[in-house]
Structure formats: structure tokens, C-alpha cells
Length: 389
Image (cartoon, rainbow, N blue to C red; front, side, top):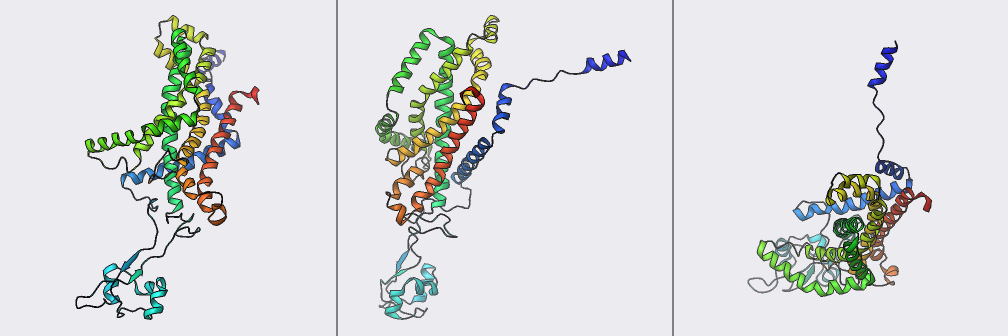
């Protein structure tokens, strides 16, 4: 009996310890506000990602965000034997409906009477074919209404989410992950002259006013950047790069990454300084581990929770900077949809009284997104640093 019990005990596996990262994830998911923020971010960024299918020619069921729903007007022609053409000939030529022409052209009906296919109109009589849908309120055709140019606000908001998603995610990847995290790990681990040079460069960049520096940087490179992309289009035989706003995306991503890496590098350097003298780092150095292995395999997991915290804060900040740059005219340029363009084209505070949807629609997406990033960052900070609550 004893032997049997010992045998069973011998086959039992010790419970596997849960990693600190998984414990942090579980703690975050237990916070209701954090879950709501994560869902909000996924829904909004998912909507922006969905519109990427349009760039590949897939019908996504949305109106063209740059298509104006202005009234279309056409003129009658002169008949072969002189005089005007019949309305029947006109509607066949322009593919119109006679009853709709009666509704859209009350002045012509008042002058010539009810319009029929046999009605003869003088040459060059201008007829309205479609109604003017500028500054329309919400309807079944335009869920969020239209702007001053008759463009569908819902479609423009969806495509503006694509712009925000692309710029914020790629700016964080290049500025926070590749440059900020990589340089911060290197500076904190190597120390000495390497640390001094990196920190002095970061101090110079951080001393510059971010918004002013971004404005100057983008304004200086704008014309040259577009010229380079036109040459790239000619070389590749692709005429869609500028049309899809790729030149604007890359320019803004470059500018935001250039100023964003400095603060991230100093933050991660401070975390590495606290981990550099840990026993497992010293053990890795003792067995001859090279610097890249120590940075990637040993130090990076230690700063990973703080990277997630910095990621949330950086995404919210970049969303605001992109909208601000575009609002003052040095960010995304038309016809590429952007929330900054939507706010700028809405006008001023008087718009809230006359056409409130022009300002409320972009704010309906910008505010929840930025609020979600900020509240998620607070929730992550509470989990990682409970003593600071």
C-alpha cells in the first residue's frame, strides 16, 4: 500500500507557476473599465481596418468618402431641324425619370406646365436631375448626415478611423518599439559613453516644443516628400500611392516617430537600470551571453509590462497630435479623410447651432478613442504599481 502511494506521488507533476505577464493580464481583465476600454479600442480600430479592403478594390458597402452628393444639372440640346428637343429624348439620353424631373424642377413646371415625354423645351434649358444633399441631417441614406460638400459623414468617419489607426499604430511601432525600446534597453544596459550619447540626444529632442517642432518638420519636408513619391510612382508604375494618402501617412509617421522615441527611451532606460544588477542578468553574463541575447531574452521580458503601459499612453497622445496637425493644415491633406480635416472643414463654434453634426460626428469618435487609451493606461498602472493608487 505504501509503495503504491509513493508511486502515485512520484508521478505527480508540480504545478506550473504562472508568469508575471499572465498575472497582470488577468488582473487587468478583472477591471470592468479596462475591459470596456479594450472593447472600445478594438471596435473603433476594427472599423478602420475594415475600410482597408477598399484600397484593394473590395466593395465594403460604404459610400465614397470623397463623393459629393451635389445636385446634378443637365441642359437640353437643340434638335436637328432647329428648336428644342422633346423631354422624352432628353430623359433617354441622360437616363432620368420624368416624374422626378417634375418634382426637382418646379420653376420649369411653372413656366411650361407639367412635364411629359412629349414636352418640347427650348434648347439649353437647364434641368436638375438629382437633389442637393449638402449639410443634410441624419437619414436612412446618410446615417450621420452630410457636410458642406454633400459628402457622407458616416463614410468619412470610417475612413478617418483608418487614417488614425495607421498613423498611431505605425508611429508607436517605429518610435516606441523599434527606436524607443531598443535604444532605451541599450543605453540602460551598456551605460558609459553609449548611455551618455543617447541621453544627450534625447534631451535635445525633448527640449524642443513637440507641436512646434512637428509643424516645422512637416512643413519643410512636405513639397519634397510629395515630389519623391511622384518619382516612386513613375518608377513603380503605380498611380495610387498619393491618391491613397500613402505619402502623408509616411511623412506624419516619420515626424511622430522622430520626436516620440526620446521620451520612451528614457523611460525604458530607467527600468533597465533597476534590472541590470539582477541575479539572472549576472548569471547570463557569466555564461557568456552576448548583448543582443541579454537585451532580448532577459531584459525585454522584464520591461514588457511597462512597455504595455507606455503603449497605451503613446497611442492616445499620437491620436491627438495627428488630429491637431491636420486641423492646423500641416498634417493629412485632402482628399485623404481625417478627423482633423473634418473638424477644420466644419468651421467654428457657430456650426454647433446651424449644423451640429459637422462637429459632433468627428468628436463622437475622437473622444471615446482618446478616453479609452487614457483610462486603459490608468488601469494598467494600477495593476503594475498598486502602491501609487
